Structure formats: structure tokens, C-alpha cells
Image (cartoon, rainbow over all chains, first blue to last red; front, side, top):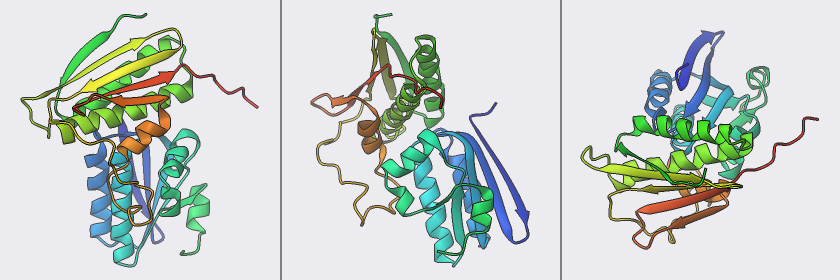
Length: 115
Length: 140
């Protein structure tokens, strides 16, 4: 298994990105490239499913913040879902749960109203 | 195990995962809890990233030295770069409202949050992190 797996699908106006494995400084460029290609295209609603993410460091957090800010700038939405356990704690520890939109599941994210 | 284990890696970020995964494997063999292993992986990855990017500025001619030792109830890991060191006492708080949306500056906060001890040498180019074995939570 590769340290980081990224899969992207589009359906009914939503872009779903599934990220699994690890995001450290070793893998951050791969995630950055994948998300930048979506924000460069001004995708309106991007949902990143992190339920199978096992580890994220400050480099990974930085990539997510950059994508979030890019989407907000063109009027899009960038939301995260599926975070749990230790990985969710990293977001809370860094207070990023106050900046990024987090949802329990893909369904909850899809049905969420714009903040 | 109480002897120090040492290794050196070149200053390229792609090596980080290999090192933290190798250390995690040793911690699993020594029955560290899942939470403790997560914490060590996170803190070690942060320490290595700082050493490679900020300490050695990704200079391929410079190396990062890692040594670790497992004692009865804890693991101690030191990460040293060949840089000039930094002032670890005067880092801005990344959770301050005006810094929350900055893409960087959270590494040291995470190390301090997840480790039992984080210390630096006087020069500021070597960090030592310590984490206890931890106890697995009982399944409900």
C-alpha cells in the first residue's frame, strides 16, 4: 500500500476526494497537486473524505488550509468529512476545527448548507 | 532494549515516512499503545520535517541524524540537523486568531502537545522527544 492514496470523483455538481493513508512532508506535494487542480478549475463544492486517513502532520494541514482559502476566494465550498479519533484530535489541537468545515460523514457534508 | 539506535538520512522530505514507519514498527514490537505510537509518528515526522526543511534547507549534502532508545516505559528520540538552529522559545502561537489560516507554523505546537517531553540543545539544531508507553483504552 502506498503511504497516500487519493481518488477523485465528480457527481451531481459535487467533487468527492477520498484521501487515505498518511500525509506528512513526504506526501504533501501529491495532495497539494490534486487539490490545486480542483481549485484551479473553480470546482464549486469539494468534499474531502478523510475517514481512512491514519496520520496528518502540519504539512498536510497546510495543504488543506490552502485549498480551503482558494475555494473561498472564488466562492466555492471546501469541506472535510469522516475525521475521527487521533486524526480529529490533531484538527482540534490546532484549532482548525474553527476554520475548516468538518462533517461526520459524506452524507452530512453533501446535505450541509453553506456556512 | 536500552541501547541507542542511530541512523542518518539525506535532507529530502520523501525519507520522512520511511523513518517514522520504521520507528513505529519497533514501538509495536515493544507493546506501545496505539495512541502512543500515533503521537510518536506525528512528533517524529514534525521533527524530521523541521530538520530537513528549516535546519538543512533541503541541502542534499547535509544529513539529518536520528537516534532513539526504548527503555522500560518510554521511548526517547533525538533529531539533529546541520543548520544554525532556531529560537524555539519565541515561536508565535499558531492558534491565535490572526494566525489560524496560515498554512504553516504548527509543527512545534503538535510536538509539544503530543509528547511528554520536548527539549532542544542550546544551539537549537537538535530536538529530543520523549513519550511514555501509554495504556490502550478498553473497548466499550
